[in-house]
Image (cartoon, rainbow, N blue to C red; front, side):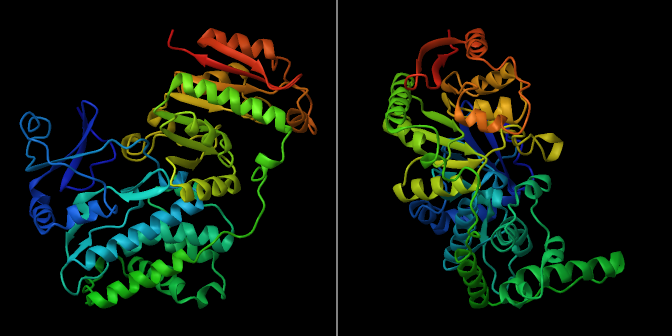
Length: 461
């Protein structure tokens, strides 16, 4: 048993992992609010409508020693993969923001509200967001202001605005400041035209000005009296913000690899052979979770699903490709979650005590990995030694498929076009030796005559 390292900020309860179960202990500080929500039926209603992660009430026998002082217990389904907002593509962050606001509005209609607005309370099942923190649901008191307004701005609105209106992906900023982007920082980037928007004035400029005023007043400032905000005005504010966010879109900029699926060195015969190799390897492995590293628009993620993979998390560095993948799998309601990843600088363990948010490696729970058209980007474009690149890829899952383009491949030639060839150890023989040293090559083939080498490995003996 252990407490989840990201569950400590709310005295109402803690999340624990025990025997591959996800449990939530409700302490005395949150017991009254939880009982009110539970007895009203709002939790069951929100679960039934898909807004809220399911929760069962397990027998407390044998659990109380895990969390002394627990008044109630909940048990949640184990999520396939936990992701963070600084890994989401634009469409995922937007979907999470809209879900959060719609959920809040639905709660207000039933006499409840949310105590905060953190984006970390949203997770994804495939491309579908779901709210996961049952203890954030509290009884609404007439006239209460929106407690989470600043937090929602920092973790949802401000990153989306930066992305949509300034064309700047927020991931480096967001990951470097896990609480999100402060309005007093974002406002420095706004021009006069930006400030003509009512939403920008109300949710970015206004909060920034208020924060500066509080700093200027210093510690001697008198407490501000909470504003009285009737429920209908709160709902109207949330609805207006929801409609604004729903209308945001990315600038029409072309990215490097967003058309890779249609613009690469494969002819149709080689593409078909590659799909066949991947499908057979997936059928043999039957993975519950598959990681598709360099998923691009999701072409081979789809092949993996069709061959029997139960869930797929696709990773790519190119935002244009991720948008195409997210749209495709969202429309198909498929169990695929496309996420942003810089393979040479993946999400680290960070936050309080360096453990509040886990590294990508610590969250890796894949049974199988696909690494197609990836290894040359690591070894040639990023100067990662070939043995280290193989180590990392094979370390993600006990079985997998890795494609190796040789130096004669057009895509590798493109990477070498403007730089000296300082990679004497980047060879097929070296690649096969590195894989064999770490696992068993269960199958290898060449994609078309003179084409790329592709192997399936298994390191489980």
